[in-house]
Length: 114
Image (cartoon, rainbow, N blue to C red; front, side, top):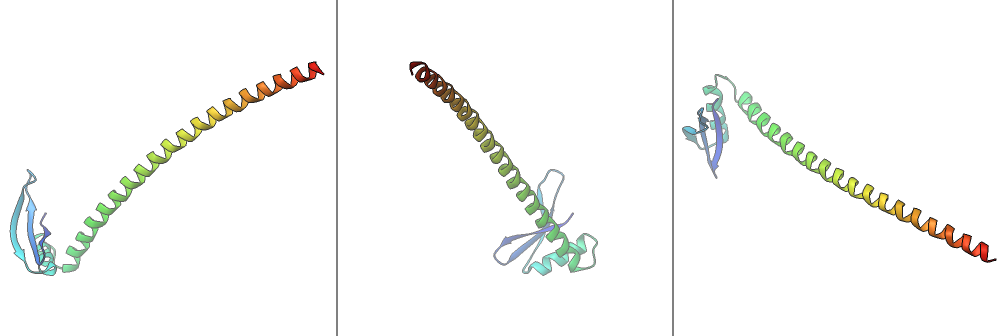
């Protein structure tokens, strides 16, 4: 499939990646529209809009993948923090039970002394 890349400030390069993932240049164009029209024609399409739609789809899919990765990192962070909090709560509950037992023993000692 033919694609174009924004290679310099005012330059768009049309080409494709061969099976070894090597970039093969077809030509350079002064505008994005010219490059997109050339890509559309090379890919057998007849309209600029289809090339723009394809470019938009590629960028959208890349953004979706980026957001999914961010979401996964956030999920992992939340899971880690939740586990830390639960561990802390377990330790706090154990300490409270220990202090309650000491208080009960102290109250029993006081009652016996009275």
